[in-house]
Each structure stands twice: as structure tokens, then as C-alpha cells.
Length: 164
Length: 321
View (cartoon, rainbow over the protein chains, first blue to last red):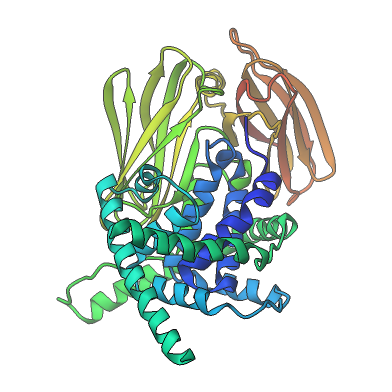
């Protein structure tokens, strides 16, 4: 049974954009990347609607866009021109700390962390979507956890010192 | 202390997971649809620009070689994602299709990875049993190797990018099922080429064989109707000549196709029954009295033919005495 595009978009845009935000550190870029991935999905919807998990395809395209020069492309610029400025509250210190810590990770480790902690994907699914062995994912996550814990701990210490 | 570290991260992401979704702006599916519609309209124009760029670029390389003999050739830079997508569309055009009239059995796109595979048909909608033909074309640099399994035996087509479409591949499904195709892309083509692969279903092969090659043929095409009910429309803007144009159509499978030929404001229509055997071509002749009129052919399947018929058509021309 082919999936319905409108339903899929309504159900998953926010979650994919949230994951992309954690990955690239910019909410605006995350929205643009996600919108572009859905545009590409709709252009091939006859084929993609038959996939078991079309969202996995959309997410993958968004990751690919995030690692290419899409954010500097004229398509991204066109998206930005059309956007209405949204006044959101400034990010909390905890979120800034998390995004800063995530940025210190190599791209693949960061992707694995986001898929695990935000997309709630089992390790086997992460391995399949990233086309690497399961052991590699486990290794990335272990290294990422250690590095992030250290980064967050240092940030907490620094914040504590600032507040003192 | 991996468990403790994991808890720290889970807590950090918990806040992110709860608050961020409320800050995300959702542009909506209306914006997606407008973007896709605008890109489809622009694609053909952009395609002409890409073809021009490729031809012009080749001229520059040759000129450079003449001026600096002995300079070692280096691989061209990888293309952007958008350029690769256009190369895929360009390859598809070489098989006679655009993304909008794509149909089951067609695969096209930019060559981004050294190895990939694609499965035609699904368990719910398998391809019909029978003999299939496989053809492929590549645009850009390098070459690709298309392979598939035919009753336990691996078969392949080697395609050099820039060559004419390569056909002649065959496979047979002994019962309805899926067809898996593998693409092995050489290093020169990864990131620098687009390709299209067509697996033609047995009904289309039957229709093509029944049509043959009519004498005085000026244009033609073949394919199958998908379940969406979409038909096929081809427009030749090169302009008619005074004489008689005849549209010959063969349809294999089930249902009926409404075939129409239009020259300027004049139109002629006939119904073409889709059968298994024997197949009989249906001809529609329309005179043209003026030069330079656009000529259009449309094939519209009824509900029974949608997803269940393959077709082949040809337009022939006889000049006015």
C-alpha cells in the first residue's frame, strides 16, 4: 500500500528537522535541509511511496545534503529568502553546551549519536542505514559517549565557575 | 563508566527532544508541491543548458591539449548533487522519457556511489512473468556495468558514458516477481555521470515486435501504462509538412487505449483494443495541408489498461503528390 505524502510530511517533518538540528547545529539549516529532502521525495513519490520506510529515505537525503555544500547553494538561499523570521527564545545554556559538544565529534559519530538518541533507532538499523558493520556503530557510540560526557562535564565545570 | 556516561547523554538529549520540536517551523506540503512543480517546469530548459555546457566544456579541453602538449590529464571535478540529478534526467531523455512520464521499469539518476542496486516491482505489485529486455545509457565521464540475474545466471551490460543507449540485455521471469539490477560504477563516473536503465516488460516487447518498423516512419515510442492511469503524450514541434500522417498503434495486455493524433487544430481519434494474441495494429490517418504545424500523439489507457498493458506506436508520413 503506497504511503500518502501529506500524512508522512505532517507526521515526520518535525522529528527529521529536530535530528538535523542536532547534527548541524542550526535550526534554520535543519529546516531547509528537511524541506529540500521532502521536495526530492515528492519528485520521485511514485517510487518512494512504495518503500517500506520512506522516512528513512528522506532522512538519508537530508544527511547527504548536510554533508554536501547544499547549505551554500542557491536552493538554500531561495529557501531563506522565502522564510518568515520566527522569534524563538534563545537556546538554553544546556542546549548550547550539547550542540557545542556534538560539533567536536567526527561527522559519522555525530550522525550515529543523533540516530540513536533522537531517532531512537536500534544499533542494527543505524548500521544498515549508514552501511557499516554493527561493531563499527558500537565503537563510534562508545567513543562518542566518552567524548561528549567529557565535553559536557567540562562545560558544566566552566559554567559553575562562571556562576560562582 | 559507560552506563553513567549514557545517562548523562540521555538527559542532555531529553531536554533537546522535548523543547526543539516546538521551535521548528514547518513550511507545509503546499510549499513542497510548489517547489517540485516549478522545478519540473524548469528541468527541460536547464537540461539544454547542461548539454551546452558539456559540449562547450569538451571544446575547452581539446583546445587546452593542443596548446600544451604533454600535460597530464587530470580527472574532472565531481559535480554537484543538482548537476548529477540533471545528468540522470539527461540519460533518461536518451531512452525517450522525461521524469514526468517515467514508468515502472525505469531507473535514472546521478552516479553517486561505486555500487548500488535497485529492485523493480514489489511483492504486492510484482512484474508479470515473461521475457524482458534490458537497456542502459550513461551520460558524463567513465562507464558503468549493469548486471542482473536471469534464472540463476548473472548477465551484464557494459556501458561507456557518452555512447548511444545499449540494449540487447534479456531476462525471463518464470512467474510474477521482482527484478534486481546492480550498478557498478567506475571511479571516473562516480560523482561525474548520470545513467538510466530500462527494463521493458514482456507486454511492451510483444507490442514492439508486433508493430515492427513501418516504412516511412518519422517518430515512435513504446512503453507500458502504470496504475496511476497516466497516459503518454508526445509533441513534435519541428513542424509538419503537407501530406498524410498516419499513427499506427499496437497494444498488448488488457483494456483499451484511446489513440489521438493532432496536427495544428485537426484531430483524429480511434480506440485500440489491448489483447494478448493475436495483436492487430490500428491506424489513424490525418492529412496536413500546411507547413510548420506541431504534431502531437496521445495514448490514454482506460481503467483496465492502466497497469496491465504495454504499447508501441509509430507515426509515418507520405508527402502530398
